[in-house]
Image (cartoon, rainbow, N blue to C red; front, side, top):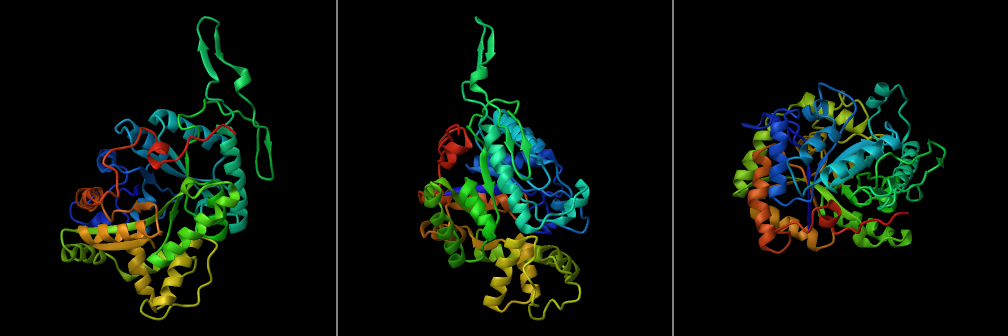
Length: 426
């Protein structure tokens, strides 16, 4: 299986930073270097850093205070050697030339370990920071499709052997091996080429996490790795099967896309120890936090609803579409209250929470992996460092002993370790 680390410096639990001894700043480079080194020691495929483009002091601390991801990952490239380095950059609030150049640069800096999480940008709170109106869901995906086309085109403007650097003839760049892009579409007009040579991986790895129908369609067509939001095994297997079934019609093989559900593991040496850790975390949250977080995720003011009452009739929002769909469907299936939803949301922002002994966690991951629900997992530690160390020191050795996870890296690039081919120049 493949393992990614979802890097939030204070942990994926909304109150993870309050756990005794936890990292309490996502701006602490010493802590971030230690996290990266632990992930590499655990032979993880990649570190993935999500991002947001606005500040809300009432939100999760790591949503409000964080380093710019490409800058941070470039620094981490110097203290790691094999682990992939992935970052979110939203297509709604960026431009293709800058994104293509930045990720090609990270790929060169890291020796072929860069990955771009291409998201549309779900939150309208970012729009005023760019002097824009937030496009609707359909328009955001139309922009994203063209954006990805342009970025991949820019990455392919240079042939692998375009840089000749022949001292005898004085030829440095062979102009016949570099081409303009000359893209002109509904949303972008980009001449190219980008002013950096072809990256070590050919193209950096493309990650995606959209859970709506347009998101699944875009991921099937363009993504190398898909992060999914799921809550139970049957739902995960259905999503996995649906995505893989789309690929042949697009000229892609099932193994060309790696599906990693998000999971927040709370690990103990016994089940009781794990439950006690989760209870400590949940003891730090309150009703006001619940309503604020649910309002943000559902796109509806939840302050007037009873947390212990039935789930109100909430339409799927234009923002955080995947999260809302997964949580509302689960609530209906299981007769949950808003407080129940919040407890899951606070624990992992709507992702799957897996709490138990190392053996129980390893057994469950094995079941999902061997029965068609996942190619691996995007691990979301509730806090750092202990919450992640527990997984690396207790669960990873069990997966290795069972022959489910690597003992050593397959290569030095992210594509090699994911088992993905190097793209040919289009």
